Image 1 (tube, rainbow, N blue to C red):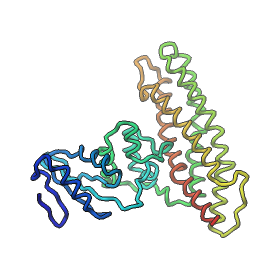
Image 2 (cartoon, rainbow, N blue to C red):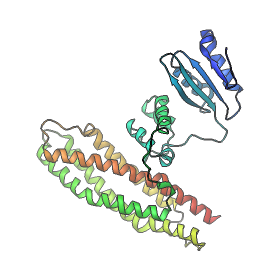
Image 3 (cartoon, rainbow, N blue to C red):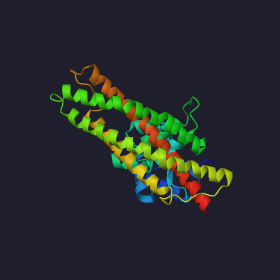
Length: 319
């Protein structure tokens, strides 16, 4: 066994039956926040799952090198009280990482309250691979990402209305019309279009009412929270009590719409066009794909940034 001041363990110098037990001993000796780097001649991924099963979620795992001769992994012991961030929290800090979630079909907006480990376990994904790509996203160049998390909540609420609510209102009527048109022409040959048309109608009805509730009730109250905080004004008690009540309703409605759009994606086989698809068929699928993309960001801004910060401001005002 070789060690250095950097706390490195060359696993290849150990007998096979001693490898994992030795790593566990060395890990257990670590203080919170300290790290152990292991060197191996193959991917030690099975160790990750063994440690997760026997020690629990108390470590982080970072690949420093991946073959072909050496695999080097830095294993760090978490500090007590440090919980894994949720998908939503990760995306709120760095929207580049949302692209990793999209790649693996991990819902960071409606299902954003799960950790990476929980979300990967539900989908049967290799969590080490997903976490590795998230780490690599930190090193990717970023073209000045929009600082949504730095904006005041009243400005963010207006941005959501002027950008995303406006997009929904301008786009949904066309999607609804094309969904019915394409169903009438191609529904006999492609029965999934009947259900897709129904789902589009449900999305239209849900969002039409949903946007109004946000614009007439929730967003004005959030702006009142900001004004009370910024100008030390008294806050009038709303008829719904805490801001958490309408937020819970909005998040539930987000989830319903998100599920409908996911069902549409499944029914259309990821918007795969059949050979007999006409121009309207192609346009419908293109609009649905773009609509879902916009809605993911729309819901992310609300669920993961606007709503949690509004709850926090209300708590501060009530203390």
